[in-house]
Length: 401
Image 1 (cartoon, rainbow, N blue to C red):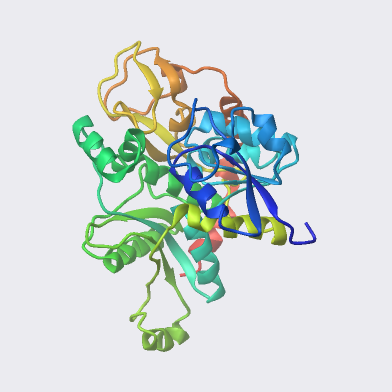
Image 2: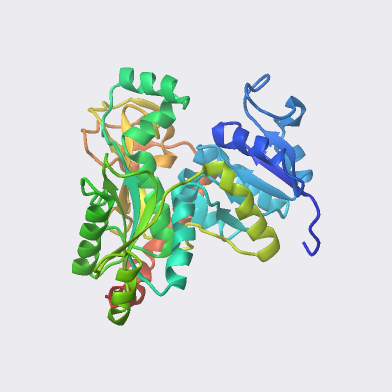
């Protein structure tokens, strides 16, 4: 758009992110909520805007909007809605890493798609721009996790769900690390990074700096630029980049309280989710700037891992946030037959799966979906490229230290 007219923003979803964004946009002059697509029946509590904006008809939303924001946490549904937006010629902004790591690479070939600032992947992408402009050479793009329980009990999850106001599945995906693994997968693919191993390293530490520097050394030792995280109850929430800089500026960096080097921890102390989405919308519409996507040829995925003995015939309604399955980042080239955790929706196991086992396509009956088609097309492209065709990129990044 050449002139700054009021943008009509269509929202897909009625969860916490979508409701918060609707309230926020309602206070602005440069945007208006054109509609909110929901699958729920009846009124939505705490919507914050007129219930008349709700629609259950996707085409109604698409034809009344200039841009679509998607945040549902349901990769199968979101894939369909993003693809539909593209058929209407609409750009899409998401806060939906779950979807991007499954079908985002395929979708990015079909239309304009970006993850927004505000969640950890977007915040790391923003921090990355700042760090590069200052001449730093990133080694680690890190997430900060305060607590992790790979197999939490339902009673604890119900308690924290009620206390924190999140859905039971969301709290469970936070606690068992699935959300973290998905976020860092998106960061790895979007910024062209590696993971050190299945599930990443995730050192436990009593300080951000110690953990960041330990991962920095791992990156140097491996000759990789890593997507990873630290586990630290003592560290504040946020994201960080561990980086190096040229030696002849070490004294100046020390003057500015950055320490002695050779590693420097650059930290963003907040991720304010929907509060930061409008800025990403404006950057996309008026500057043509995409912040982050899953890359056209990803190398990392999030596999479905059994938490317990799952007998043949087990029905899994939704794996993300379930008590039977969690997600773990893996290298696609090493585990090409894995089922992405985001595809594990309304599936039956054809055979028993043991705790800790990666679920493969031969283990499950997956219903047909556009997301499944998108993944199989993406996998076909990835498998055709030796070592994901990123050898030169990895070598150049490793040589900055």
